[in-house]
Image (tube, rainbow, N blue to C red):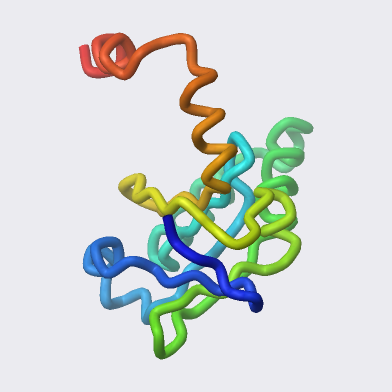
Length: 138
């Protein structure tokens, strides 16, 4: 668990920072994720995602809706001198993040969760880790 200060800042753990490319210049894009978490993309990974978004059709209503939902709350943030990210109030409200946050690295991005919501998410899943692994890692 990590603390969120009164200004909405959270310290990004060193174990995750070491995997971020130096080319990012400590710049991240925060946006809404799935299951009420936040996605935090290093800027180089965000640029890859943007390229994928550009390949979606502006004539397809589902594509437009997804792009709007993803970008509506997207916000750029740079690590400060204490390696803290500032989480905008609107995103904290979306994810119900108050004084504590669970931080999870997920390969190309970081997820920020309200710890209680994450625990509820984990326990609500009908399948076990092992059964999902057997399906996914065929």
